[in-house]
Length: 411
Image 1 (cartoon, rainbow, N blue to C red):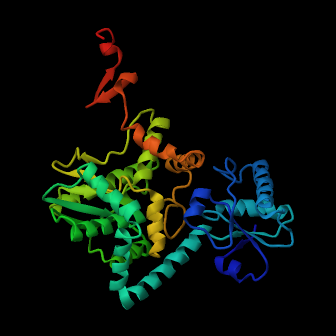
Image 2 (cartoon, rainbow, N blue to C red):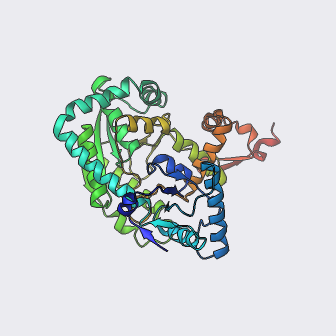
Image 3 (cartoon, rainbow, N blue to C red):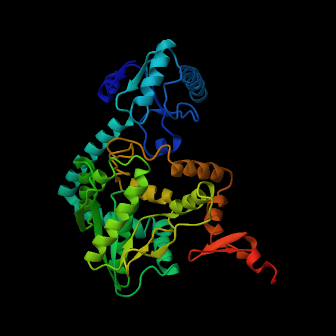
């Protein structure tokens, strides 16, 4: 097996074939220029490399798919570079490809090294932009919200606030910023609403550092400065606390983060926290509950906290599509961290955005269904607005289970 660094791959001036073998959904988020994406589903998903026959089958399908995309099988005279998430999977595949006579290399560290370099470049460009003419840039970003993205973002934001009554007079709202595209956009929307709307509330822009690495943390700080968002930062040791958790550390991390946000918001005199979940998060949650939870439920637009008296959680991005958020991000040349958890591949400086998770599987499923009929996404959303209790066998309310037989003989 031969590994090549990113610098070595780019310095190879020969004609070459670069194949990104990450999941198609992840490749669509960000891809290396001039690479082709070939994702072989169902093979080498777990414990890859342990089964030689499976690895051989993977390579054969990779060769076949390459022929479909390029019009011919890859030449054994042209170097092939494989990119996966971490470099582990591409190590195994490139080794087998070499045994088949191909000059095949694995990109050392996988896509994480590309992401790391992108972050470094973005930090440098951000510093230059901030030092040159940042005030004009902020105005341009804000103008894009109410002009170019008025229909798909601004109007959906205000509609959710009005339709679900998310803001009341006198509210002090902790706008929780994780550093990703969704929460950063939400912060700008709240700024616009406060500046140009009815000033019946007060926003506080809250950032929690649960233990980000220095690079990810700097991206958050630079983006806040670049976008003109005055943030309040507090630190926790959540990443350290869940580091040794074997089972479901993501669930524990999410619960702890929510608790810290409620607690800090309350200390700052806030009565609500705002989270950046969007329309796609909602419909994915609905299907996840059905397929893996055996229940019909949704991510609510607002809810009362059960552990922090007087506190509420609101989701003002509830009606905004993720693709609109991505278009806004790209239009304004912004780069945000993703999950940034240092214990998984979900890190802006190490690549990956949740490959293999149930949510990623559901996202792919919905994407496939929507290609056949786009109305499917809206219908998933509407399904929990049109529940007819007379046609369900049982349901729960306030912790009490109700069965259709309870009242059946009285009808």
